[in-house]
Length: 214
Image 1: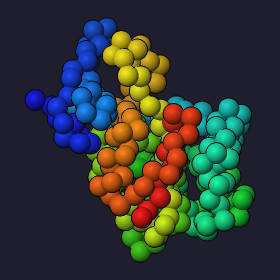
Image 2: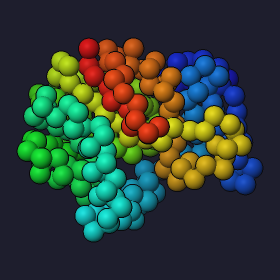
Image 3: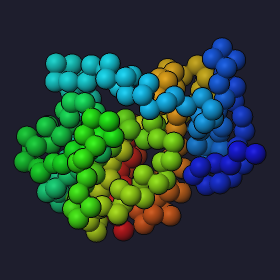
Image 4: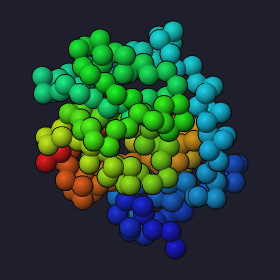
């Protein structure tokens, strides 16, 4: 039996007949995960990321981050000095835009900037955009990030919430990315927040979650 990675409740199985893959949806919190047998290897994953046109030359990519900052970060910017952009990709566009707003920004990415984490440094804000859907152990990563937050610090995630209907999920464009393996609901985020000393301040546009450390 597969139990939910977030709340450990029972899950229901969804099968993608065309691709021959399986997903598990939690019957309690709604979290959806790809069966580990179908998770791509790290070499293939890195090659996939490297193909992304995520740079300042991509207008839509820049606009996505500007909207993210306006909606998620600006309401709290007076309380923020030092930032960690966790999972910045091969071109740290978000980090550069935040620097332009006068913030001190560190970057980390598993494949492209793997040496960016200082164990002795803490942050007023940690951003992680389009990252958590790639994680096989999201609770462990979230726990580590919370340890790096200053008291009352903010953690702002961007990731798409999955459709509640199984058929709609299996036809959903977002899950077709071969590296997208974890899909969160507001309830799954509430559960993790309560366990890790966070409060959910806001959920914006069904894809941005603003946490604050208690």
